[in-house]
Image 1 (cartoon, rainbow, N blue to C red):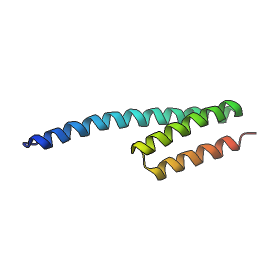
Image 2: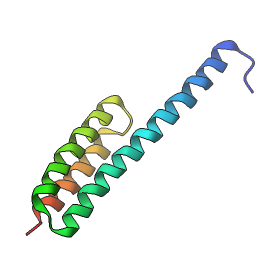
Image 3: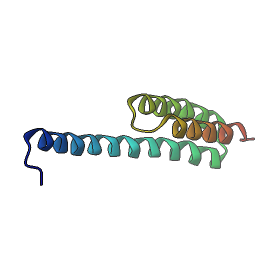
Length: 87
């Protein structure tokens, strides 16, 4: 346990940020799963709409630093390829 006041504050801030980031990552995974489910069902229009929302969310969280930019780009490319392959 930390004895220094500033370190105690940093621990509290880290815990708060961890909670926020884990919530955001869960939201992002849900959006990704929605696109994948719609793509598997063959619903191209609905999947494209869900893709647009998911990409927006991924970009926002990449900009905030919740996920790295490379991870965000990889996720977006995977989803775009998935939606484009729907017949």
